[in-house]
Length: 139
Image (cartoon, rainbow, N blue to C red; front, side, top):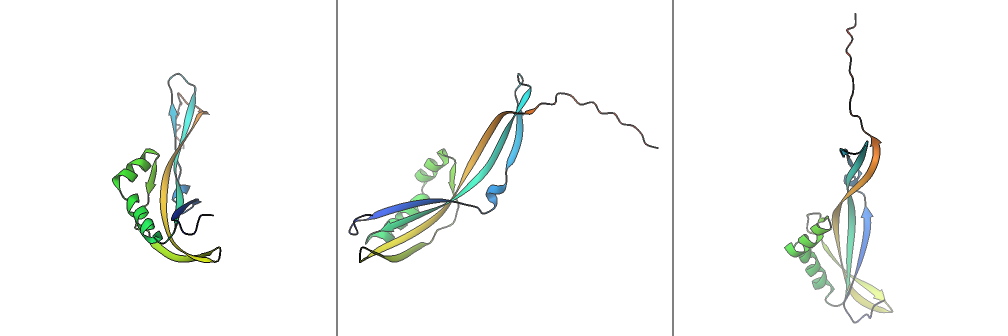
């Protein structure tokens, strides 16, 4: 636990499920020299990130975090890891918390992020090079 007179921010990351992540886009890639195909599975994961700021300046710190998430520098950094902020201005929730018999100012900010995932499973499926089709008229 932190010193109740100092400013501190705890970050909690939790996976969530809004249904968007249930959509998988699967395709099969081939290499000329291989008899087997590589399965490529792409989907989205969703995360809820809670920033809990403590201290007399907790609201101001939480607001700086929220505003910073929309900055180009933050977007570029997150984009490098294939993480994207879900657009919408998260609300700041000021509160007070009792810690060691003292009331401490707290402000929570919750932001949602999507992360793109790509999984390759090499040599997963046999390759079909040729198919013969014969049509027979019915009487």
